Length: 244
Image (cartoon, rainbow, N blue to C red; front, side, top):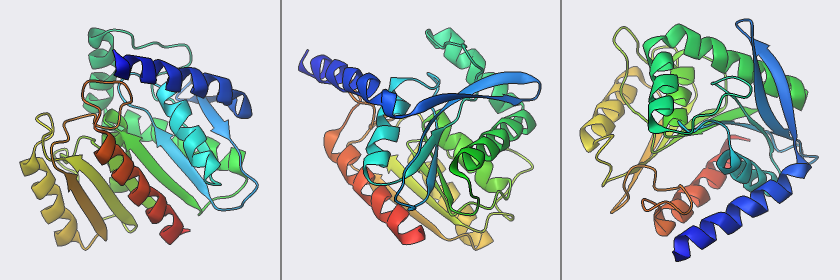
């Protein structure tokens, strides 16, 4: 009950703060999408956030606001489409499953999001991509595509590499935050990715958190682990300072 109250408070706060940013409509593959952008005057750099399987909602807005408080411009991309809601498990599975099955389309949508983000920001070459769960898997897809960003960061994301793909085109650092107790994405997946990145000479940093299950950063969820969330977020901010 206490966690639910905290979650509702955080989400209400995020929605109040969201007035600081703007929802931005853009097109990709003939369809309209809607991201969320919040600018910054500090000149620190741009962070692209990729949503989890719920779609772009209050969670990403909250994270965007948290990053903006640190001085970063943030663009939360939309991979499902303007007005598309993923409210049930079946809808979430259908929306993410379609993109997992069509990696070219996933890349097309990610690249459209990057272009719109850098258009809003007014510059390129100063961008980091980060994602949660499904979004973390999408960020690794972006890394494998050879997109020239400063770093690729995944929080409890899918780590497997699709058949026919590799990290030979990835030049920037890959950072992985993973829960050791994650039963959806196993430590075998974690180790396989580490070996692959090492083999391809990709700079990387991979951290696990004991007792942390899948989705350990999701506020208010039974899976939320405050210590793992706090520590991974602190390291994320350090990575941003290092690459900018």
